Length: 212
Image (tube, rainbow, N blue to C red; front, side):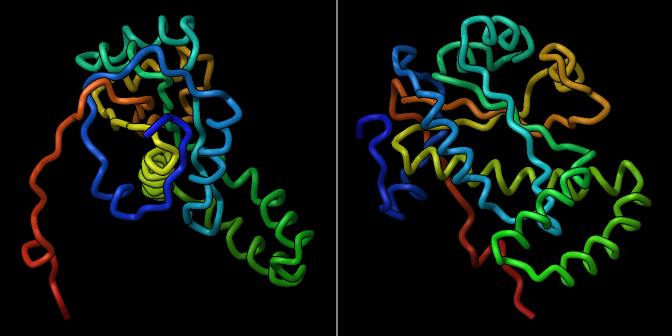
């Protein structure tokens, strides 16, 4: 499959995904297509629709030069990939509430009285959250968008690999972000696999599911 050739084949998207260790470094992803993929991934659900995910797309040699030293044992994947998407969770996500809900009213997706009621109800709850409580919410939501982004990339003909092993305590500052506000979630390498990658055994539902 050529890069940017989209597919709607469910089995290809779900079961064709592999753990990718090497990428074809000659493959480039346009910022237009990357933006399209992020918009598609951002249809993921989130708590009260606050969409706390933020994306740092590293797709230049200068950006890679900053990121590779932070990537621990993932340096080769990061260097080879067409881009690396650093997913962050924004602690100040409720700052966007008026914009999100106001736009919903403007588009006819929500009545004004519902918007007013919900914002008045949610604002004190969010204002009173501890850091730990906020982290629980935004990390869950950002995990949802990250998995959706991987599936969207697959549908566009690209391969991905999620990375948790990197210098999370340094990455925000290295790229000029407020580390007190933006919580690192994961790195996603994206590009075209240079090899088939690896699949692995998954426990069947019979072993992971409880019924009540």
